[in-house]
Image (tube, rainbow, N blue to C red; front, side, top):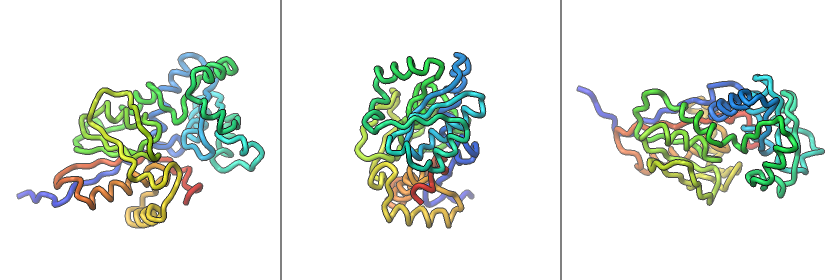
Length: 270
């Protein structure tokens, strides 16, 4: 006789173990963008990010690995004359040229006119959006889930929306997105309805911590020996833990949490 579990089952897919430098979901988001850059014979890639950006870190390594130059447009011109933090220092060691711009200028990073000017200024560089999210990134993120995915719920952190869109498109399981930002309305490029996003666990907003989240991270890492990224994955796991406690998941539900990596930025908050 098979004894049925009294609670839902939670598994973690460790994308943080996919690659030591092109961490987690960034591996999948960059994969087809780099293939396209090489196919079009660009000599380098140009992208955007903050001072501790996982995307900047991953892009610098990936470009270096594939023999491409790289340029990072970095938010905050006040950083230009300051000592480089570990994320940016490592990016420069890998050959990335850093261009520091004002926060006002950085807000234009999605505007067509601004992007056209950058493309004219750097005609041999393939432009990748902030966070890497575009159609090719979504294509890559469709490959994240195992071939046979027998889960009722799949949970992931949400930043720019590329990873969750790829997950939504690749399964009929219900996707729960845990936003790292507060009060953002996500307009995902999908017609499917098997998803929702909550910002109830944003813990004050992007790259912010609460005492409760910090305590949760410490206890989780001690108990499970799995490091958490405080910007994204920790907030997702904090939210999942709360949903379990509130009885959101039913007995026999199978839940998969996607650990999207990003551990290189831990030192900025922990």
